Length: 142
Image (cartoon, rainbow, N blue to C red; front, side, top):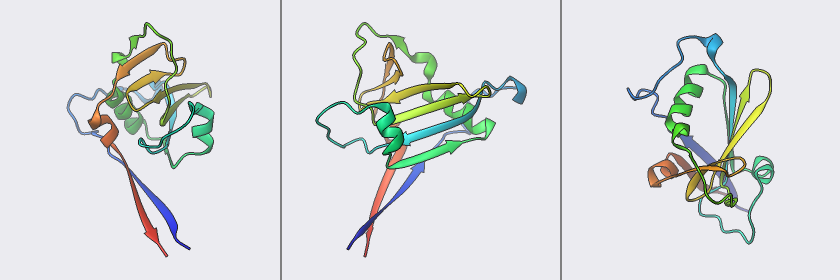
């Protein structure tokens, strides 16, 4: 029987001079980020719920380092999310949960086309470069 092993490589551009880091750790809003990913090309019959992806992910990554969290936030360009005229939920493949130090969770998700707030009221287009940042390599072993 063949087993499928998943290897997930997440590439951050933390050294990019455009990234802005917080001057003080105590001003850090988020203490943890959890990322859940299901392959972009999966075909579904109906929209997956965010909770489904959290429980049935192909790959999960947790960021606890302040510099990595800040770099990831800058890379996501959350400031470019725009108010959406339609609040239509999209079919998520990537779920990003930010946890404040108080434990409060703030979530975003990405479909094959947009990065969205959890309620789908704010969105921005994503491109192939965004999707290519999340590589899913599958190797088959006996």
